[in-house]
Each structure stands twice: as structure tokens, then as C-alpha cells.
Image 1 (cartoon, rainbow, N blue to C red):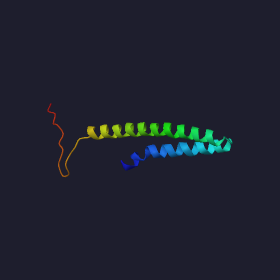
Image 2 (image 1 turned 135 degrees about the vertical axis):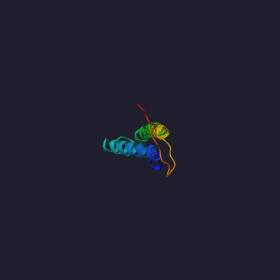
Image 3 (image 1 turned 45 degrees about the vertical axis):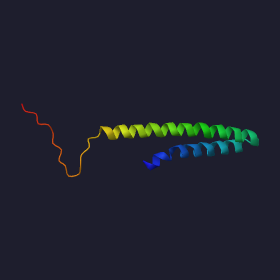
Length: 82
């Protein structure tokens, strides 16, 4: 669960690195590079937060569906008689 909380930061840093490298290779001026980088970081941080919330909600729903049993407790099936 701890690793999922790092998802927005990882997505943001990856997008920032790719954007920085791309803008450096294309020889963009400094103001354009910083403006584009700021927008990319903001958008991808928002996407990362949404992805994290979706994953956490899915995991919580999955945990709620699983039957809860205490350790050592024997679960019995319902007997069907013909």
C-alpha cells in the first residue's frame, strides 16, 4: 500500500524527465522550456493522483468482498440436502 502512494510522484518525475530531455534536444529557449515543463508536471501530477485513487478504491473494494475470518477459525460450507 505504501508503494501506491508514491505513484503520483513517479509519474510526475518520469514525465518531467522526458519533457526536459525532449526540449533540450530540440534547443528550445529557457522561458518556453520552463513554461512547458511546469504545465506537464502539473497535468501529470493530477493524472497520478487520479490513478492512485482509482487503484486504492479498487483494492479497498476487493478487500471488502473477501470473507473475513479469524486465524484458527474453521469456515464451513452450507450443507445442501437432496
